[in-house]
Image (cartoon, rainbow, N blue to C red; front, side, top):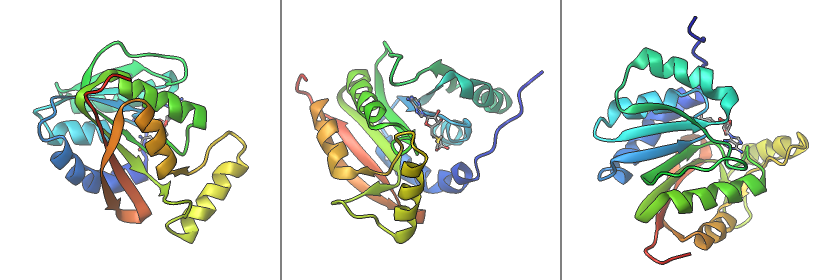
Length: 202
Ligand SMILES: C[S@@+](CC[C@H](N)C(=O)[O-])C[C@H]1O[C@@H](n2cnc3c(N)ncnc32)[C@H](O)[C@@H]1O
């Protein structure tokens, strides 16, 4: 029996504004790795809207039945079944033109965020693109009181979660050969951050 398709209302709300950014940033991209596909709703929406590229889903294995249910239903030839990928323990031995991830950096521990950037650095070749969507702090400041409140609730959960400083992410990115290119202000006080892989070895 097919698993029920999980629903994330936020992923439905933010899909259209994120797609606007990806259509621009991924115009010349043919292969994308998504880290933390979650429900799989973004994968289905973005692969359907960008048929020229192949969208490789991935996540920790507990999310695979839901992602697979969305993919099976959508029957898109350019949205691929999920890779088992916990950035702390698994690796990916393929190259991609781009990596996309949404609402993961504040859910992952700092150690996992560092592992994610390291993985992104390995799977992208020179000129590769990393788009990361979510809430961030800039220069140590929260964009709104509600984001600060959200951060406090994440920290209080005691699992190492928390809204990350964009400048700290830039430093982690730099260590793996990624330089920030653009920053998009998104609805609901979120950002999409775009880093490009340089040609230098790291
Ligand atoms: C808030 S959900 C976001 C899901 C989806 N990207 C979205 O925007 O709806 C956070 C995601 O991060 C994933 N995640 C958390 N820690 C991870 C890790 N160590 N490695 C890979 N994925 C991780 C979770 O499994 C989950 O899919």
